[in-house]
Length: 431
Image (cartoon, rainbow, N blue to C red):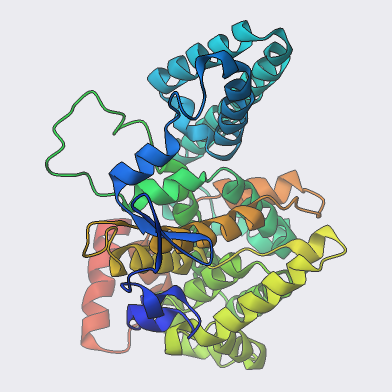
């Protein structure tokens, strides 16, 4: 991955970095505010401020407490449902919900709806993860398939979907579905560091997982290898050139849709060494459109061109009149990298020991924007045949890609010749 510039350069002059470690002027009970925004404070002061006591809610005003607690639990279960995959968390939630419902009959229906909605979400998540596991367990190397079936009867992506615009739409289906199952808590868990002084084995340290986030990154890698496989597999040069031009058109439509993740995966696949070394094949390709796409996703200046395009897509989404205009699918690996550097580049606590709320406001801002994008409904009609192919067709491993590349256009030097012989011996069982 390209190097990311210093952390301070990631924010404009109006960003929160400028006054990050400056003491705030207004204080209230150990909490410091600026323009009515909480900037910092000790954890003890925050707890004292948030925890109800007899002064906040006297015993005879329990009816005032219940709706606030119910509202909090409802928002918690809607925004962070994966927290409750842990049986202990779910048990505590049901216990507290039962207390609220038993205290006032009018709350019982709301409590039941909250619990039922949460259970439906968790059931859908489990079903989705089972599908992912099934797909993963049935994956095979394309070379194994070619050994058992003649290449003449093998399908390729163009025989399954001849229209690049349709393929871009089906890729968008996959992207939005997988994005939808990534919980905001997974971003937190991806970067959280366990306190070395915390030896409490009974805490909930294992309840959160990042499986859906990891599955989305795996999808990016699969799509890149699928693109490279489809290009390297044809025997004839003109067929390989046609495949490259096909994927260029798919990538361009992904850009128009706002599907930047598929766009970058396709470009990544076309730039893999086994593909890029096919000079005779590329000589037959009209590369002007590909050059434009590479310029848009150029990693220089911290992906300046891409970030400009992303802001444009985000602005279009805010003023959209149709579902298609709302689509914003960011280059996910870069989003993760940005959040990582934001998390690592600023301390959780200020020098005076106060919690650095400004850092967490900015983290929340980035994750919240992503959460808005992932909730967009895909407006395109699903094609089960195309989706099945994209998700399950075997792809070449890296070694198999190199072997196919050398078989298509022979080695150019002694290093490539030696590798070719080694690959033929190991993968094909012949010299």
